[in-house]
Amino acid sequence: MSGERRTLRGNPVVAAPGKLFVIGEYAVLAGAPAVVAAVNRYAVGQFVIGLAPESDFTRQAVAAGLRGLGDRAEAMPPGSVLIDSTSFRAGGKKLGLGSSAAVTVVAVAAVMEMAGMSVAEHRALCFELADGAHRSAQGGVGSGADVAAAVHGGLIRYRRGRPGEAGGQGPGPRVATLVKPAALRLVVFSEGSPASTPDLIRIVEAYAARRPAAYERLMLQLEDRCETFIEAIAGANLEVAISVAIDYAAGLAELGAQAGAPIITPRFELAADLATNLGGMAKPSGAGGGDLGIGMFGEPEAAQSFAARLEELGLRVLDVDLDLNGVHRRLPASNL
Image 1 (tube, rainbow, N blue to C red):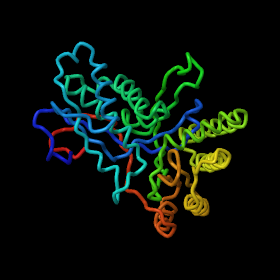
Image 2 (tube, one colour):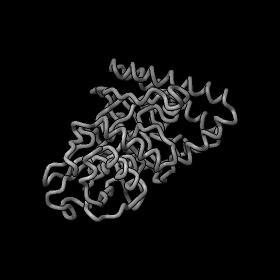
Image 3 (cartoon, rainbow, N blue to C red):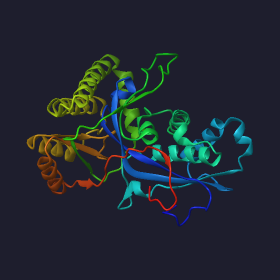
């Protein structure tokens, strides 16, 4: 689907944003809090009668959406959701901005809206359904943080229950809104090497099974850094936030080395050194492997210098900004 060209007159059109991990990669899977930002790359979807699902994510999401309708599902005609997720690609390659989560969320939301159930009034249900569908499509892997960002929008603190709590599922995901400090400058970049998040997570899970004590020690260190980072962001203390994020990146590097996972690539190491020399920091955003990176700075000039020099390292700066809406029914003739 592209713009209004392939939308059907009268059927609701829904948009869901992508995501950017600020901090909390891998540790969130062990129960730590993560900070995730919704970004202005959108999956746009519309329920189409008689359409077959275009992917397993869509199939799982439509089925979940129908289950969430209750008695309303009986009145729904057979069909699926037509989705445009082209804004998550550049140069023919997928960007690591959470396209699968956005696609899943927009498919659930499009089913809800088609049945007359406003997603704006049922965000908790939309998250519950999309989270389950997304995890199922990924073989049970993932934290759901990317789904939460797509549903709620903005900058959020996300925490899933610890494994083993409440029958192994934890007490359920918890989401709280954070305010981005006005002075914080984010630079998003990519190596252009799409990585498989489930594959990288499975490598780390295998390491956790081999060396549970070492894994737990590292996760506790990362969790402590996440908590300190969140406190610093809440207090707009960017000096502390950046310092803690540097420590977190070092923890990710150690995790990758111990697990044998390419979480931080050589180019990302160079980007991290450059950012530190400019008074900021840079790290992978998400599972790693060169997929997506984030730089954080307290000075706009430093952020601009960092962005300008990334191309020399073979890295591409992505033009993204914070989305504050989350999943929403798109207004007629709107690009969002």
